[in-house]
Amino acid sequence: MPFDAQIKRENETDQKNGNHSLFCKTCQCKITHPNQQISMRGDHEHTVFNRAGELFTIGCFKTASGCIETGRASSEFSWLPGYSWKIARCTNCGIQMGWHFAGDGPINSFYGLILNRLTDSR
Image 1: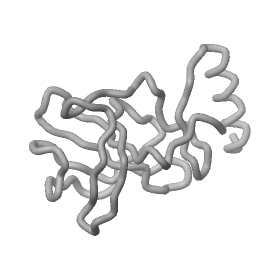
Image 2: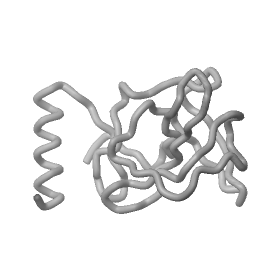
Image 3: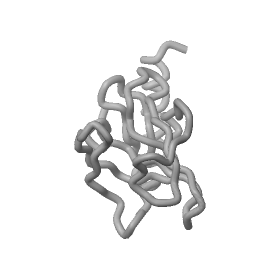
Image 4: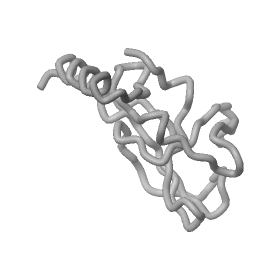
């Protein structure tokens, strides 16, 4: 199915079900839902930086079906002790959407998604 037709079908399904989705700003692929927001270290939203010194504001989400994890898991420079991470990319356009974290904490895995790469409209 062409991507535009898939977007239209997903929009119609979401509207019919009363769901609200979050999409990739680059290609409008559905990434997650606001109801998947979770709190880590006492908050949903965090400002973090990577090894290169780039600053990001991320939101924590239990699931992100529109993301695929890439690369090997690493615990180096993890923002959360006890969690390793992989880069999370949009399944459609491949842009980095954030990181997938896995560990032994109270929540076994979650996504830290870069908030300015998400939009609530297509």
